[in-house]
Each structure stands twice: as structure tokens, then as C-alpha cells.
Image (cartoon, rainbow, N blue to C red; front, side):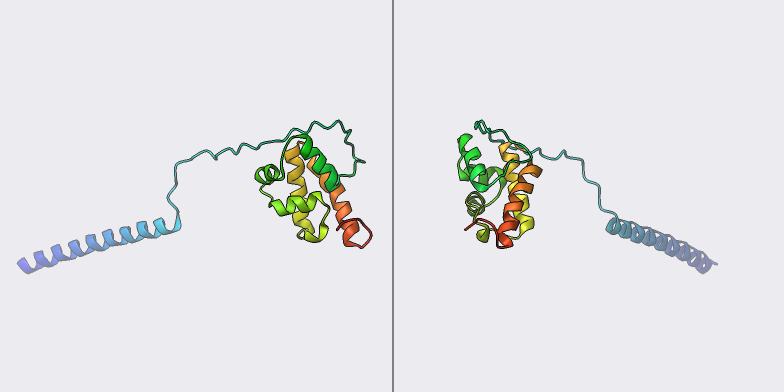
Length: 149
């Protein structure tokens, strides 16, 4: 009878161990599937510096935003090309190319549109209006009928 008692104890112990192992396996599987939540941290707010052009130019939907106008606006804000590059994260060579209407030195149109919009934001003017106007110049150049280097 003692062997039965040991046999029963061994079976119960085995079942308990199996149950614990199964639970550990499920917990391990859950930890692999569901990432551990991290405490919420507010996103760092990036302070965006804006230039303040002082040119007395009336800007309208009809204004042609060429590179030279953008340069004049930048200069009226006492800003350098490096300032624009730092604020917008656009490379200096592209800022120069935009200001010179050097379309052959600029990347694909989708990038130019973004660069010009960022430049306009830095100047505190409507990025859509500026991008639309500048991209019309860019398109004329690409189609062989516009100014540019």
C-alpha cells in the first residue's frame, strides 16, 4: 500500500509540475506576443524658429515665387543660407540651388516641392502658395521653356 501512496503522490506531483510548466509556457508565449507597456512620455516639442522678413512686398496668389524672391525675403530677415539650412534641415547646396533657380542641381520634383514648402514655412509665408508658384517655374524649366541654369 505504501507504493500506492508514493505512486499517488508522484502522480499528483507530476501533474502539479506539468500544470506549472504549462502556465510558465503560456506566460512566456504571452510575453513574446504582447510587448511590455512602457510608461507614457510626452513627445519632445521641437521649437521651430521662424525668420521674419521685413520686405514690404505685397504677396498674393499671383506672386511668382522665384528663387531670387525667396533670397530677397531671406536677406530681409537678416538670415544666411546656413540659417535656412539649419531651420529647414535642407542641405545648403539645395538652398543655394533653389535661390539661383538652378533646377538642374535640384533633386526630383517631389523633394523640391517639400524643400520649397519648408523654406516658405521658415519665412512665415504660405507654403502651398510658394510651392505651387515655384513648381510652375520648375515645370517650365523641365519642359524646356523656362529660365534656370
